[in-house]
Image 1 (cartoon, rainbow, N blue to C red):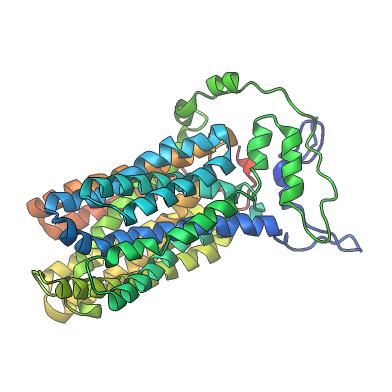
Image 2 (cartoon, helix red, strand yellow; image 1 turned 60 degrees about the horizontal axis):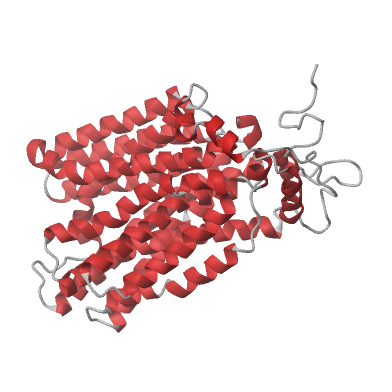
Length: 493
């Protein structure tokens, strides 16, 4: 009878995750309550958080820059839509096309390449001479950001102790909202100091040097020992573990994962079945859990956006309609920057709650609870249609605030976290990338279908549909639940 612990290697050595989870022992033999982070683990975390920060920063910049570049390039409504869709389409493609390559080439190479691509296209956006070149560069930015969805998660989750993996992944994910909030401040400041059409170029330019620095800093991190071990490169995995767990005083004193195993890349690739493996009997449940609720979450996010202009106008002031003068365009942009800051504060509060509770309450419970809370917020917003004046505004505000908080506490945060945990190491990048791409399909569909539905059935019934999709999200999450809280990645396999 095999009595080796779960995740152990066959010869009785500790596994990769067991070494990462190991806690120091006091002189009397008592283990400490937690595993202190090493300098390398913290470096990996902040470099991943920086990527999410840039994502929030640049997505916000595009929204604020749009009125200015629309004037500079004389964009019609269709061109407006192309600018907005370019980066979204890039994210959809990049999450699967590039994110999945992390399973073949490794987590570290893609972690570096995505930020290098981001930096190059960021320079291109800043210097765009015409509209087609701008769209191409925004699409390139989206490709890089899409790749970051799975890879940023993997480099964190595969290097952190099991009992705190959730809060570190979500802590980095929360920097999306921090980046957007910082972008609001940068955008407002640049518009205040430089009220001209060229201000949008300076907005993007502020991120170039930090992005290059982060790209270079990513060269210094370790590869995933989980990935190396899954590829049979045990000796290299041991060397990586020594660097990853280098601390003072040193523990573990040595790492022994067993000898090098023979590995055939071509044979293994064929055996894994690539993306088909995600729909095998073994992984089908994980694929549904990772992708379908994320898709449904994006539908609700767009739905509450129907009321965003009303809320921003009430909170921070009214824009000038039919702005044609540069001064009017800049003033409207400054109001938008203030409004974005109001939104981002609510989102940050939600993600803080997710960070604090994910490793205590569990991912599934928070996601189900969050979906139900989103349904409540959307339902309150739908009630506002039957009122006017202050009561209408109160209902819109209440619905918006509940939804914004609950989505980041629940599905917006937990879908990202779950997608990077429920798949085996060999297809984890593909699984997380597919889930992100599937969610973005939902975002694209809503952008095209919701205006049509809004005209056909009205706001109230459209929001009723979104209430239903949120409830379906809770049901699908519960029916396909795979609770990853506190479990090491090898147990999950």
